[in-house]
Image (cartoon, rainbow, N blue to C red):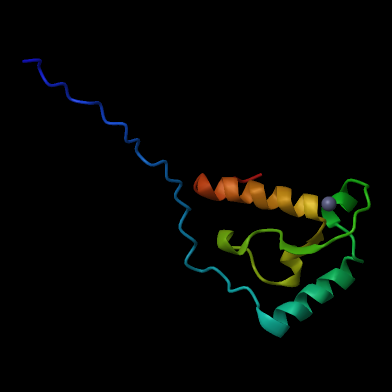
Length: 109
Ligand SMILES: [Zn+2]
């Protein structure tokens, strides 16, 4: 009688990415009509233009009011921490922040 063979397990451990815990002093983002008024005020202040592109001498239509320092990283919800960004700049900044957050927090610089 042939000897029974044990099959190798094909299960792989899950690759989980843990988000860094949010700082306990995270500021709540304004919602509802207060948030709408804030975003409109920033849009007008920044003349409807992407401020990151403007810093590089380019002109792009801004579409997203963004927190320069994210709230989860301890940034404030004040106007001084907000700027208008175009979609490519906002998408790139958001992706970079997600990468840094997954790595355990914002990297200085
Ligand atoms: Zn831009």
